[in-house]
Length: 283
Image (cartoon, rainbow, N blue to C red; front, side, top):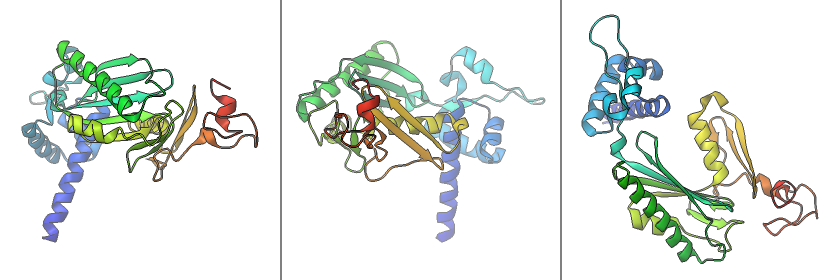
């Protein structure tokens, strides 16, 4: 039994490595995927065949447009050219909503990680209650999905949503504890959105989301870096050892609300002398 468990664990790791490689680099041949992941060609072929049957991946002719497929196709010195494999865009979709003082931006991406549709609208009403805020956000998500369907992008099942917001969030409870752009505190976006779409919902700090995205999409940055956003507020996302630094609250690195000048200028958070009070747009 223990031996079978170890084999299953290895298979799961190999599948995850192959999916991660496709998400990082796009459609490629099995030979290129083997080189990128360190897996043997036979292992890549076996896992690839299984994921093809499951609809997780698809031949590049389906995944990419003709120009992309031609660029991705590789012709070995001998034998038939290998058909590149890529993530199947029709498998699923994901939604990200970013709530800021200036706007609410909602984006829809397919399973291959490509942007399908994006819309930017006015900010949520600051003085609205939690229910009204959630209803307004749902209306914008629904409108974007309808737009994507009408432009021929299809309507793949929605598998995950992320709500990113300025301020302090609790990743475990999936709530916005405090935000400078909302009067309401302890806003629960996750439960009503999850009930509406039947998909898991993450609620995160906007800087943390930016840092996580850069760690995955730009490995050249290395394992240790910081992202600092300066605008209507000031925030930081910190990556150390390739992992986001966070505690129980996803916005553990509240750089903008560290004390710069004791007893200094008033900050939007209600305290005095924060970094944000001197560096944000309203300073």
